[in-house]
Amino acid sequence: MDRFYSLNHASIDFHFKQSPRDFVVDEIPLYEFSGEGEHLILHVRKKNLSTMELIGILAKYLGIKNKEIGYAGLKDKHAMTKQYISVHKKHEELLEKFEHENVKILSTTYHNNKIRIGHLSSNRFYIRLKKVNPTDAKKIDEALKNISSQGMPNFFGYQRFGSDGNNHIDGEKIAKGEKKERNVKVRKLLISAYQSHLFNLWLSRRLEINSLVASFSLDELENLLNLPKNEIKKLKEQKHPFKLLEGDVMEHYPYGRLFEFDQSEHDFERFNSRDISVTGLLCGKKARLSSGYAREIEKDFDDNINADGTRRYGWVYPTDVEGRFNAQEAQYELNFTLPKGSYATVLIEEIAKRKLD
Image (cartoon, rainbow, N blue to C red; front, side):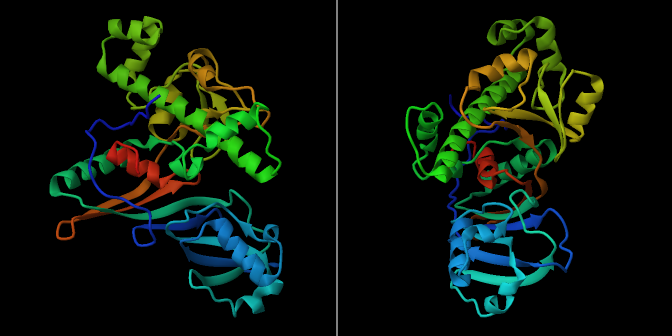
């Protein structure tokens, strides 16, 4: 299935390449650090290094194992990124002498707990697009306006699927027992890529339904969607660009508990006001499944694999979205904040309405 996009404009031609000059990420922590405790919190700036490469450099310098260093999330390699990591405070004196051409410790503080995966609120991005003409700059302005007001689909970005984009293929074979992988971390990574691939296919299918609902009449949609006329009418009446189906699994936004959408007016209002959002399946054991019409679509992207499953927001809301066009340099600069787990490159692809090279 081809990737579907949420915006209606034609594709926009510009140049984008991830680099420390044109792709900057600033991690926003989940909580304020206490300033006391046995864990030393480092605010670190890195460039052209993955988070795991950063962890490896620091662990080697300190003479400790990688797992002794805490971090909240993985940051892009081909970028300038700032994030928080934690080590035991006994290493503080040695770290005062740490030097690396691609790593700088910006500040330190203390906290009672080790930083763990997920201990971040969101990420703030700065991105520069090049070779942008004035006409396309206006299209980008309008696209950003729509994304800021309506939100965007929460696809997994290309980074999830490896340098050749095919990690999900090996992941499927491993998940189904058709291929062996002894390295536990690699096995988990590849299976996760397969789960992410199925999620992206599901989300594209739901966006396709949104597009059909907006483009065709009730009678035409009855054949196209294979849904009862009264259900299609409900889809037509929805104000939000992402159309909810009976049986969708919703989640309080930007975090909270899962519950089943019952098509009540109250839930529609909460969805329109960003209090809740729709979720998609990352297939596997223990994952909550949708029901009704939503499940009829979801089951095509489900698979009985030997891994734990979960659910992920299908629709998210970038905040503090800003855009500036520099006509003299033919460049367009963007700033925006995304919730954890969402990809800035997906937002850029939504604007471009094409896959990034």
